[in-house]
Image (tube, rainbow, N blue to C red):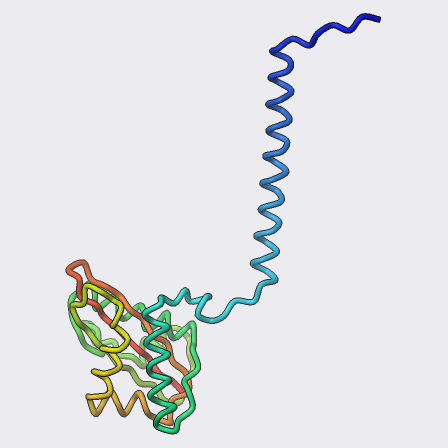
Length: 182
């Protein structure tokens, strides 16, 4: 029996089929790995809420102040972070700095509107025109500590849970919201 050489066209087709097979197996493996990681890996609340570095730093500084005052650190709530971030984005988009939106919706209504049950609620807000966010946490907490009302909310033993949200407006203003609940 004589072996005939395989034509180049047939060799290319076989190579393409083999490459496609490897690609399909790789994609299936990557998909299975992603599903496994999403279902098995335990993510922190910060990861779930996708907290920014600035939001995490503000929470850390606020908790440092609470510990210095002899209080327990606040627990992070991903749901409260979403509420706080939403208010910061609203202020950034509509260029206002207030606890109540232009429609009159306050922190308690925003928190309850997300289905968060609470016995006490509070909020701190801050705004500045930083270009560099590196020192935002230090400036925001220092401003809150120098304001009697904000300091009282930050260091209140009534609150045990918090969420922080930061947003930047198109003109560069930074808006920070921290919501507290018990």
